[in-house]
Amino acid sequence: MTIDIIDLTAPEYSSLSPVQLAMVRSAQGKKDAILAKAETKKEGLFRKMIANGTARSTALSNAQDEIAAKAESDVEVVKADLLYQLAYESWNWEGDENGPYRYPENPNYNLSPSQRFLEVRNYYMSVTSDPNARLAAYSKDTLAKSYLGEFYVTLYDLLASYCK
Image 1 (cartoon, helix red, strand yellow):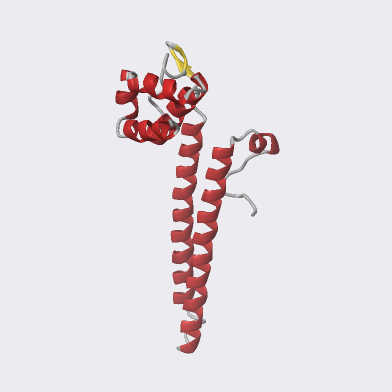
Image 2 (image 1 turned 90 degrees about the vertical axis):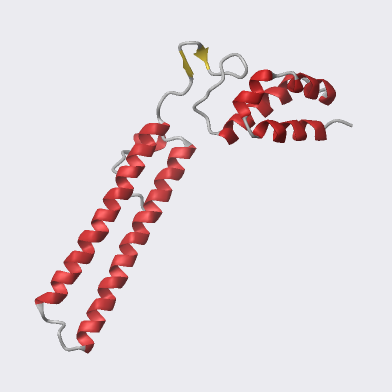
């Protein structure tokens, strides 16, 4: 896949995180699909006008120009969205005025609910290897209830499944 949705130098491209690379590849796929669809429309229009004997008229070139302009507009929307996503993803989410993000000392509320779930799960899995002590500590964690929301019970069930 040739990446041409945005202009990046080799060092800029190599400094992208895996998430950002996935965003770029996804946007490139959308761009390629938009351009392929536009070319298919142009070819279909050309065949239709040949069948009607009007392929040499200015209507064909005008219609093809309109299709190309629409496709270019759609590509610009995808590009703008990609640039926004890359800018948002590159923000420094490593901490705030309270120090670096770390559960439970300074939880990161910018994470999605599933990412919060993983953060809390990893914390409890690293605290102790005793599954019963892990479950007891988690059941007393009042921060986890508000931090995880609906995922609190899911994590409780997961931790309970490790107990014998």
